[in-house]
Length: 282
Image (cartoon, rainbow, N blue to C red; front, side):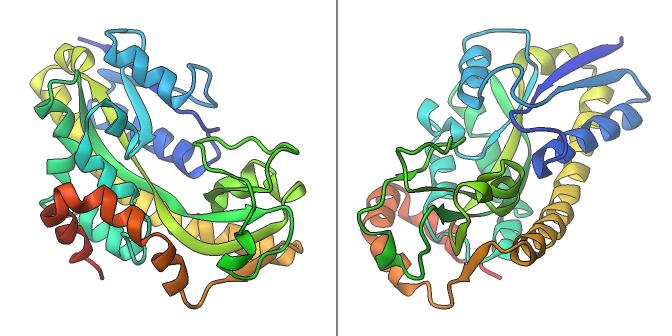
């Protein structure tokens, strides 16, 4: 049977996550012999990440797959996912990919199933470390004192805030340098993402189609790993050459110390599992 799966993506197709969605579509259609078609609805036309999650977890069948922040399911009871958003968990990209390609990763991806939520994880990805960008120049963590910083999933720059935080590629694609041309590379968290498919959609697929979807998911995870680093390096070079004030952070110790209580408070109930994540550093 021919099945069409609607894939929700909040960012445009030319972003890292947009290109990741397009790659997944191509691989699913190729590996399923065209019997599974993926309809990628990008640029948030189906609603925000939270809107989409609320809908599919509430039983809506109009969306089959959603690309979400890896920790978006935390507010729905997925505590393991919370660990992926703890500041300074991952030293670098290689550290995250050591986790994403490990035997531990499925334990995180399958957590919604264990909790009885009607979705299952397909693959991991990332869109780079998140950094602060500000209206006024900053050189150290002390310069952020007293500033109002927006930290939502999709920060909207207004005169109300002094800065916000995003992965580098999103910072540029959203034209934030036009209003906040100072980027300090503190890398407080990694923009880890995942794709989830609803149980309803999964149930429509034959065993062969399910296998094709999972094979496409594994291929897409590798694609994202290569794309994200390459794209980010290119964007960072463009930002520097266009006059953006890019500040490198050579010593992250003061930043880590400032987050120490937050880290402890949010990992103490899963200390052993969190240590496993830390031990995967490259």
